[in-house]
Structures are given as C-alpha cells and as structure tokens.
Length: 219
Image (tube, rainbow, N blue to C red):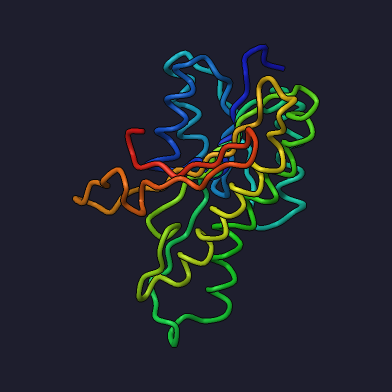
C-alpha cells in the first residue's frame, strides 16, 4: 500500500486522461489508472513509472456497478484510500435525434454521467471519514448548452454538471474544515475564449460552503 496520497482517474486514456495522470504524478500522488482498455492503461503506467512515479492499472467498465465497485476495492487494497477522484470517461456520439438509436443514447448517458455517480459512491465514505477529499468531473461545452447533432453528448454532460452541483451541496457542510470539493471542469469552444460573464464562465451560486464551479481551461 502506498504512503502517498492517491488519485483515481476513471477514464485514464490518451489526451486529457494521461495529462491529468502526469500532473498528479509530478505532485507526488500514487496514480490509480482506471479504464476499459488494459493495454492503454499499461502504456500510461509504464510512462509514469519511467518518470519515477507510482502508478497501478485497474481495468474497469464505468457503466457496470459491479465492475466499478471491484475496481475501487482493488485500489483501496493496493494503494489505499482515494484522496482525489477524477472522472474523465466520456463518449461523443454525433447523430441527429432521428438517427440516434436508443442503445447509443443510453450508452452515452451511462458513460458520460452514470459512471460518475457510481465512482462517487465508491469514494465518498472514506472521504467523509477523513473529512476531506476532492472529486473532479471533466466536462465539455455540451455541459452548458445542447447543440444540433449532439444530444447524445449534451444530455449526459448536463447530468454530470447537475451531479457535481448536488454532490457539492450535500457533502460540503459548514462543519468540515476541509470540505469535499466537487468541481465541474468544462471546456470553452475552440478559438472562442470565454468572457468573464459568458455562459461558459458563470458559476452556480453555492449553498453554504458547498462548491460547484464551471471553469474554462487555464482557471
């Protein structure tokens, strides 16, 4: 079991997932890499370990409760309690309402939203015991507005944003000196930087000390 703080990244793949893993590794965290593809996880693990970091791979299907529960049980056993959860799993189906099949719509919602709910359930108990912890969800412009041909993405990402707000308001009571933070990170449209008062940059008003924000990259 690692003595370092543990970050669990569910959706640790190419791009943002591996970038998050690299950053936390530089900060001295033990990295729990979680995704469906064991081959991709092993490649990231090898890179992190080659740089002197600590990383373990845990194949997990974010849409299956038993798989998520088993994955986090293994993280607890091999690395210890999760200090930071990053939910980065996502799928981006592009299809109009009439072309989008019920199966694809359901799968998109499960990956983009339901898996985050399952993951949060797995880490909240230990975070509440320690009275601290961080939960991060990565979003997209679809978290803030729907677009033609992207209903499959936007419905899940809207739900993910609502989940972040609900978690923050429920699990950051005033008596916590180190409140649990539930943060929704949403990207601004390419080549269109957000203005301070634009929809992409507005944050919902928290209740008490709960915190749920929507941030553009770099904030």
